[in-house]
Length: 261
Image (tube, rainbow, N blue to C red; front, side):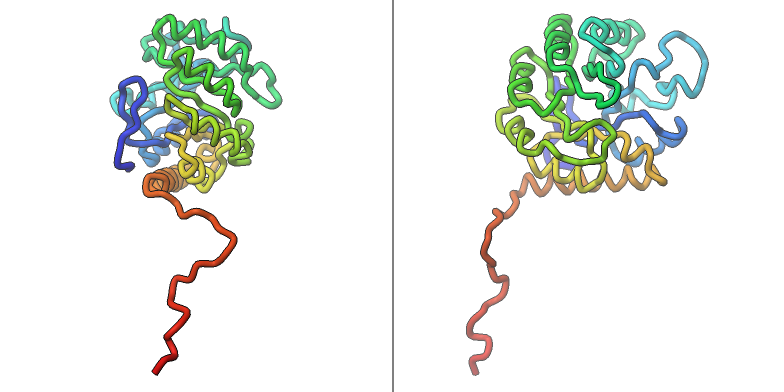
C-alpha cells in the first residue's frame, strides 16, 4: 500500500492498480484475480454488462463484482462518437450504476486509438450532467490539459495501443502530461508486464489500469499479485526519489587506504 491514498472526485483509493474485466476465461477467474490484485476500482464495458434483466451468468459479469468492495466504473468502449458515449453513460446510471464513467471513444477497430475531438465533446456534456469523467486519451499533453479545464476527474493517457503489451512507448509525452497535471493521471493501455506498471509509477503516474496482461496470463491470480507488488514498488520508489542517472561511476566502497598497514 502507498503511504498516501489516491483521491478521485473525493473518493479515496488505497490501491493504485485499477483493473479491467475483459478477456478473462471465466467470470470466476476474473473475480479471483480482482481479489488477488487488491484493486478497489474495476472498469466494466457496458456492452458486456447485463442491464436488461436477463439471467445469463457469463454475460452479466456484474454478478461477480462486489459493489461493497469495488467501485464499478462503467466504460463506453464500443462508442463510435460523442453521442453514443453519452447515451451509454446515461444508460448505466439508469441501470443503477455509479455516476462515474470511463470515457472511451475509438471508432477505428484495428488500432483502437481514441478520437480526441469526440472525446472532448463528450467530456464537456457529461461533466455538465454531473458525471465523474475519466477519459481515455492518446498521450497528448494539449488534449489532457483541455480535458482538465473542462472538469474531468482524471486523464487516462495510453502507454501504447490497447492490448499491445508494448509498455510505455509514449513516455516523453507522459512526462509532460504528469508535469502539468492538475488531476490524477492514470496510465491506461499497453501495460503488458509488471515492470511496465512499475515504470509508470516511477514516472509519477497516480495509478495504472491493467486488463489484458492479467486476463490472458496462464495464471491470472499470480499475475494479478505480480502487478500489485509492481505498482506498490514503483509508487514507493517515486515517493522516496530515485537517484539521478549519470555517465560516470560512483564507488560504493573506499578506493584508497585499504592497503595501508
